[in-house]
Length: 148
Length: 148
DNA sequence: TTATTAATGAAAATGGTTATCATTATCAAT
DNA sequence: ATTGATAATGATAACCATTTTCATTAATAA
Image 1 (tube, each protein chain N blue to C red):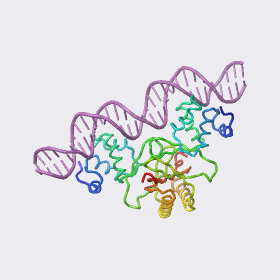
Image 2 (image 1 turned 120 degrees about the horizontal axis):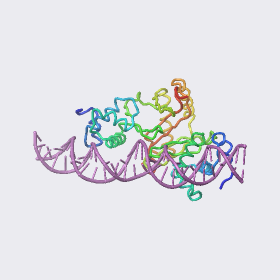
Image 3 (image 1 turned 180 degrees about the vertical axis):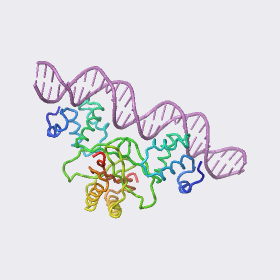
Image 4 (image 1 turned 90 degrees about the vertical axis):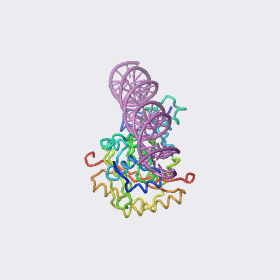
């Protein structure tokens, strides 16, 4: 059972209690580069922590999203997927998805141009539509090597 | 009851039968600028065509998507939304979504940089990952005027 | 007009996600 | 270290969008 963790302090500014499921779920997502669904997370943790229920997975993922630790997104296969939100700019990425087999490729090429574009677009949209722009999803889709 | 329609011919290259539900659903989507869910479409058509079942709505939407008449996308509220895919380049647009009330703003006043960015990214991703890139979703999200 | 069979619609099934509520575990105060 | 208040959990059931099943209906070719 993990002890206090490096995220505990940051976490505590948002919610009151640091618990094993929160620790373990956040830890798992921070270590993997996969885009996991709630069920996949449940299955991954089951061997080591069979006591953690699927309900708690969902609740925790929602909490982690609302507090900015993870991103939630969908690729159209009917379930939500989650990924750790790295603080490092270098690790920011977008997705290239195969609409046939569901494979997801993270890409982070072009970041300079892209960051510039994103920044400008956010500014423009904020002004023009009086929005408080919080984030963005950029996804390209098509057929992967095997499926095309 | 609508007679043969301007889309019939194009449609027939994909499937064999031109039916009332297909006519009516495609017609509705082509006239509205809303991003409708299956249920909303069902409700819209119910007064005039109470015989059309929700099952057929789903089946037809899937067909229209596969044959390139409409786009399917999600804003994270648990249901899929559909929009007519205009042939005109001018009408291509992206979405700005309010995560609180679900309001969607289409914006198509792209900056040159955005078009440039999309084009370059598609090219590079195609080459680098050997993908056949078919399209993209670009969405910015945040809080709208009323919700922020 | 008729035969063929694609398309439909009602109902049931599916599957991801959320709500309910009794129980458990965290943590501040002692 | 113990305790008490209550936040968090987990099992179950509920919910809801979507899909499957299958008997019936209707579009098209002959």
